[in-house]
Image (cartoon, rainbow, N blue to C red):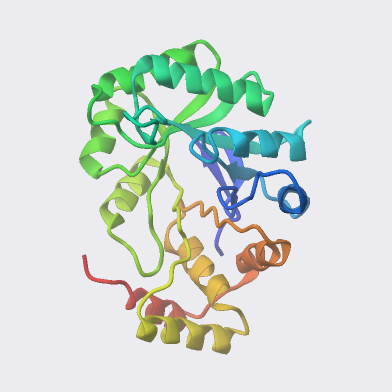
Length: 279
């Protein structure tokens, strides 16, 4: 039977189906009220891992989650990401892993989320213009200061993961991965061997019509939706898999979380295994 929980970093237990907050509108008005309701409903339904980032509205998404959920219930983990900033020549978003920028973004996230420590802080991307050791060294220092509990990475290769693990303990990797997009299969394997949480972003993706038809056929057989089938496949794919499907609608949220109860047959899983695009 597939486990419903995973211990990030070996000690931070979360439900394996989390929630990605990126799609929640943050502007004032009915859309924001709906976003607050979705976040609260996620927690009501037992979600214990919610993913956000500074990039999502320049911190507005973090503020939204704090408004919706603070004071946080015991066991809820809100993970955020740093390392992207409006530091381009025209104020456009760009990778920025300079130590001062990372430190400022972590400090601001602590304030916006109303916490003294971020239990899981992820580097959104590696900035190629800043030494990797400087980027991770800054986060390591802030962990030593008690402001970060665990450090994660996003969109990394196996070589980059190995390099990072020589500098810090890596608790999670957040790469794009789903039943049709498995470019990062080697990274998933590396995470399995090291007991590192693999947090796939875009865990449900549209593909070629033939693939979509095959997923729909499995869903019809199982009495489920194609989205639920895709999420169930992920949960069965690896014990370190911690998907974070996102939505701005309560009904879609409930649909996503119900995937945890879906158990496909070996033949159905085999059908899904054959669908991925060649890399």
